[in-house]
Length: 148
Length: 180
Image (cartoon, rainbow over all chains, first blue to last red; front, side, top):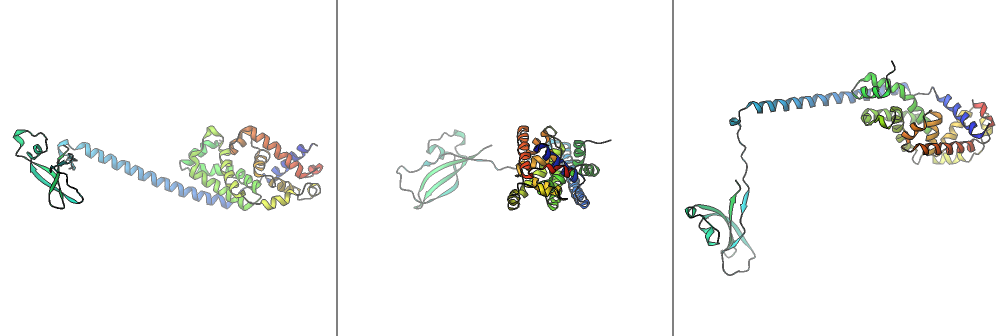
């Protein structure tokens, strides 16, 4: 017999010897228990998902059932738009510290910095930020409006 | 009717306990023997079998029929668990065993089967697994390749090399007839 055949015969004998060997019976019980736990979790998850889907469906149905005019618009904060700062002094003094004050000024103030204003709105008041130096002088101004 | 493995697995993943039980009973023996023949330890074989089927419960949906049989999928999982345990394990024991070149006399004794088992266990894991799969578990080259995630050619060459190493370890086993 060739060495390879001898090896195959030996392996065949080992395979035959082991053929009936199986995992212990108690292992089946442990694994099935794990399977049941997994299945139970799966069932719970499916129930939860169905409940969520049902709740979402009901919410959509209620939303669609309401006429549009009954829908209360949600208040949102309009976005603030500011111009650049316009200097209010002819001479640029050194600026180290100061305060920014939010104030209401006549719309005509826009003209003082070269911005166009409609004649019939000159008396209206607009919002502005005034930069005041620590010495108390108004150094610059910017105008504020809100995105519609 | 003998339901096929993929169908049983599909039903098991849907939560059918009967299907899972049938699949377990059909495949546990192979997984257990594979682990046993790879490690030589009944304790480890039991642990690996348990871990393999727990992994099937958790990750069975990853099975892809295009990549192999359910059996190969299970062997692949078991192989990972086995290799984790073999990492750095039994090296001293294997080296010691590898020193015995001629087991002729031992093979004439009643424990000759266990000598063959020891010879298999003394093979480096890469050769041992292919011998276990193809020669002890009757897996085809293709199945073994799927389990080992390597080309069929690699299976062939490793098997040939593994058998040669076994032949050397077992020596002049004219006695081999005594273990048949």
